[in-house]
Image 1 (cartoon, helix red, strand yellow):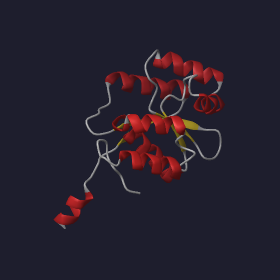
Image 2 (cartoon, rainbow, N blue to C red):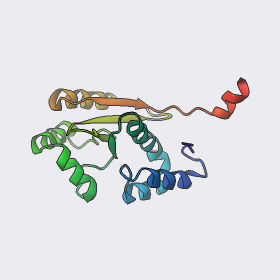
Image 3 (cartoon, rainbow, N blue to C red):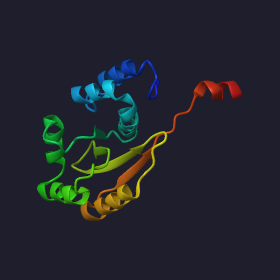
Image 4 (cartoon, rainbow, N blue to C red):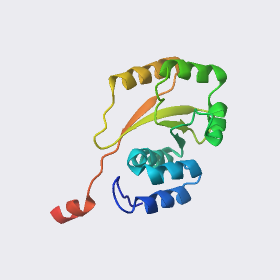
Length: 158
C-alpha cells in the first residue's frame, strides 16, 4: 500500500484505489467527500484500513449516525441498540462522535476510534466524551495517531 498524504497531487488516485480495494469500508459518499476534502479524510481512511488489516474490523468513517447517510445509518442502528444510540447522542450532546465506528468482524461487538493526524491534537472535550462513552456504553475509544514518514529520506540515511 502506498500513500499520498494530504495536499499531494495524486490524492484522487489514492482515494479511488482505496475505495476500490476496500469496498466494505468506503462507500460512494465517502469517496465523494474524500475527493473534495482529502486533507480532512486521509487520516481517517488510513486508520480504517489499518484496523481492517490488523483486526478484520469494518470501520465507518464519520457521519455514521446521520439520517442523510442511509447505508451507514442502517449499519449504525444494527450495531447499537436503541438505548446505546440514545446514550451516545446524550453523551455527544451536539458534538461529533468519534471519527470511526468500528464493527468487529465476528460477533456483534463494536468500538470507536478517534484519529489524529499531522497538526491535530485531542481536545479536552473529546477526552471527556470518550471517557463517558467507555463508562456508559462499556466500549473502548481507541486513539490512533497517524504519523507520516518519508521513506525516501529514511532510505538515504541508511
